[in-house]
Image (cartoon, rainbow, N blue to C red; front, side, top):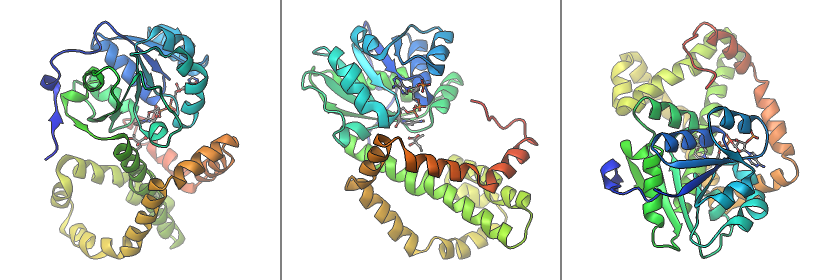
Length: 331
Ligand SMILES: NC(=O)C1=CN([C@@H]2O[C@H](COP(=O)(O)OP(=O)(O)OC[C@H]3O[C@@H](n4cnc5c(N)ncnc54)[C@H](OP(=O)(O)O)[C@@H]3O)[C@@H](O)[C@H]2O)C=CC1
Ligand SMILES: CC[C@](O)(C(C)=O)C(=O)O
């Protein structure tokens, strides 16, 4: 069984007396910055002027251009979008890194695919929360946390591991548990999870179910309730107690249908397709496609985003969610 690190595994705060520059104040950035500060760490924000800079100032942080924040910091946590991290690093962070500083990430993409090549005299570590940034903050404020993975890519000072674990404690993750990994393993499994199952697999499955019902003549609102709204309730049960709790909670009819029809939908072809997705992650084809599209101004990404945003399931869902004001759309 893998070793899990908790609060009491981190006896001393290796970040004490150090300034942490959180670069970016978006989904992960705002959560790391606020959690670290609440745990008495010294945090500044490195960001361009705009919406996020305003939000960070409103939340009481000192805000600097990225280069200036990197210059003032001992630890630079890069929480800008993956696709711009390479340029941001080359132009603003690298010229301001000093020997013995630490460079940190919440996802291994740019180190693993060699977009960012840090100098040998800095520590490089990762603390990757296993959940969206808004939950990293929300669960912390509720007294819990989202678990994280940590990894050390480069240990120039001999303290990189302590820094990573202290950082994980700073954002709250050691309250629930932190696991060690490598940049390669985190990058490949994270990309696979989000593409094949969580974001890509799940939305494609929901849309296929919605379209099957609507094309068969059923009301789109009913189709939405059946394949999208109830998805969360079912996933919550699996999250709380595995398949067993979900199957215990649903009717015998649903459980029987689960066993006989699930494998008719997710056939061995689906697993073969998942393997192809994994191959393209491992051989770097996905990363190249993403980086190349970004270099051209994201034409493919923008077209796909617009096409998906216009799907009927989104308009029907927006109307139906008005019936449920307790659903938190705005954080
Ligand atoms: N989203 C998530 O929950 C998770 C993300 N991660 C990783 O965390 C990292 C950050 O992702 P995420 O939080 O989603 O990013 P977001 O897109 O939510 O936020 C990015 C932030 O970077 C800022 N930014 C964008 N361009 C620049 C620039 N040129 N100079 C300075 N700041 C800039 C944005 O500011 P502005 O408002 O001005 O655009 C924004 O504050 C990534 O490595 C990602 O893989 C890891 C686990 C989960
Ligand atoms: C599932 C998406 C994710 O990998 C995450 C929240 O962990 C991401 O990169 O946003």
